[in-house]
Length: 364
Image 1: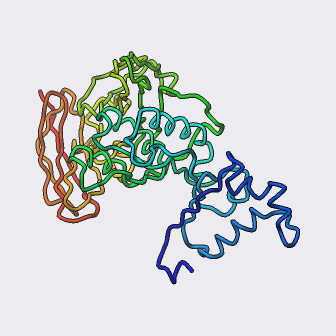
Image 2: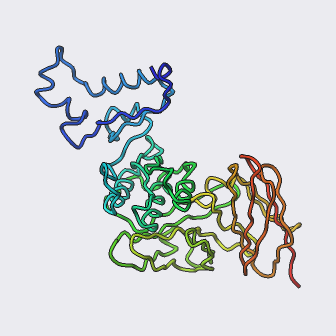
Image 3: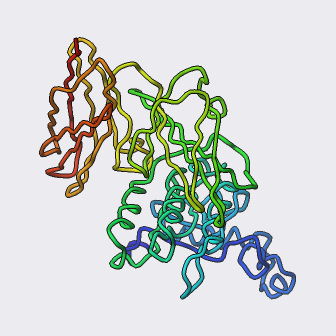
C-alpha cells in the first residue's frame, strides 16, 4: 500500500490509553466486544499489526499517543507522547509549551531506546515571545525528539526560522534517567561524548511566565568535578560567560532559558561552540584535535549549502592566532578575535564536510 501511494511516513491517530473513545480502550468496551461477529481476545493488537502490514516493514510508523507497554510498542517507530500543544485557530499559549515540557520528561525514559518521542509540533512564530520560542526549541531539540514545524513557514521572520534550523538535524540522544520524571525540572543537561572530546550542553529554565528567577546548578550535580575550571558559552547571547568553578548561576527572564556549553579548561586553544545547532557541536562537529608541536587546532565540521557557520574557539594567553584555513566543502575561513574568543566563520561552497585549521603562536 505504501509503495502504491508513495508515502514513507504514517501517523496513526487515536491510539491513546487516556480515553475510552480512543482505540486502546475502545476495543475493551463491553458493548464493542459484544458487536464482534467472532470472539477476539486481542483486537487492538490485530488492528496495529494490520496497520504495520499495510505500511510495510521499511516505513516509519508513528503511533499517536501510543503507550510503552501496549501492542503498538513492538510495531511502531515512534509515539506521540502528549496532547495537542495548540488548539485549532488559536495561538499557542505558555501552558501549551509547559505541557510539551512535562510530557517530554514523563516519557523521556523510552525515547530512542524503545521508540522515538514525538512531543507534538514545534511552534516558534511571533504569537509567542522570543524567549518562549527559544524555550520550546530547547525542549524539543535538546533531548533529540522528533521535530515537526507547526508554523506557517512563509510567514516566519528570519530570526524565528533560524530557531527551526538550529533544531535540525535531530541529534541522536538517549536518556540517562530511565524512569518517568513527573514534574518539571529547571535544569536539563545533554552530555556530548565523542572520541575527540567531551562537553555538556546545559539548559537552565525559568518555567514561570510572570516573574524572573535566579537559576543555579552545582557542577557536581551535573556530574562534573567542582574543583575544576570550566569555560561556559551562552548560545542565545552568543558570548563567553567566562571560566566557572563550583556552580552555574544566571538570572532568567520569564519563560526564558539559558543554553550553555560547558567545557573543561584545557589550558590551551580549544573549541567552545558553534551556531549551527542547539547542541553546539553535537551534530555538526565530526573531528577535533590539538597539535601541540605545530600549535594547530584542527577540526572537521558538517556544512549546509548556503548557510554560513561560525565556530567559537578559546584563545587564552600566552597564545595568539596567526591564520585560519579550510578545505573540502568550505569556500573559505575568516577569523575574528575579541579578547580570548576567536570566531571562525566558514562559508560553504556545497553541503558536506569542511576541514579547518587554526594556527597559533606563543607570545613572549
